[in-house]
Image 1 (cartoon, helix red, strand yellow):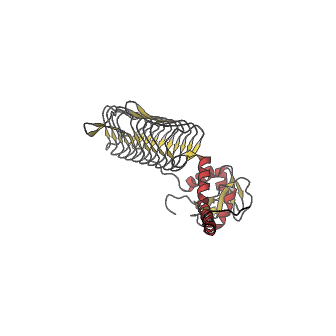
Image 2: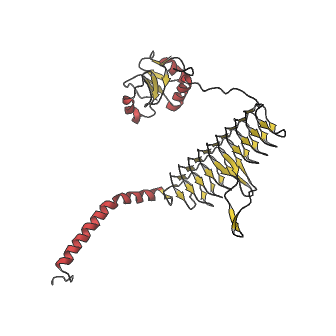
Image 3: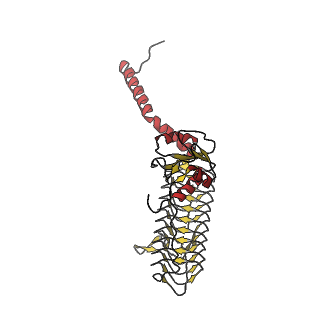
Length: 356
């Protein structure tokens, strides 16, 4: 057990800690919390649904956190109302999160004298804060992050190492920008002038609402003349591309490797699963769900689930997929029919029918 681990704790003490009920030996000691697959003989694990309880038989775990009302099983348990909330608390008990040391404004950071730094900000070594930047209270800028001229960063926001905010990017309150994300780069817009490509106007900016999280390696391009916007509460996974002039609504969930082309808009509570591609100038309605690897080339109505390339309504896509699974059998049947027809024609080459 490393220095970051907690001492062994009884099941009774853990149950009190998470307001749960012990079934089995309350004096059982656990020294760690782990998943079913990785738990050792002194670990406590979790089973979050009754239909997964059979998986516990293959685990070495000494005990498990289970849903309320599970009843007696082959090892001690703690029954709780919310398995994941309770198990997360137990994990933090055994492996407390490391507290970041307060650095204030590091002398090794490059902070322009015109920047306005709010109370409680933490600016780590080698961060760069440009001219006329305004940081609200309790903003954290990690080592190597770059916040360019004119940016505004709301209170409680965090910009992780290597992230870059181009000129005039606006972050709301409590925004998290993970490592190596790029906000406000030029959009991919060109026109042909006298036999060569010329970059179109890049006079806009990026504006991020409150409580947005932006994953590592994600890029959001600036607008042509106005802002590219991300609505409050939206969560964006790693390695997502959102192009110039897009208007993403509130509380969207955008998963890894999604690409959204320019001037596309979404409503609220839209879900885009992994590797979705959305063409330019379309609108995705409130509550729509775009299934993994969908290729979206037209507007998607509100509360509609689509799948496939091209993306179509889920029920229709399922019918297509079901039909495709029958193709080998249908091919075999067709081959048999053709053989029967050939045999009949061989018996009567002219196709004559017997007289009545």
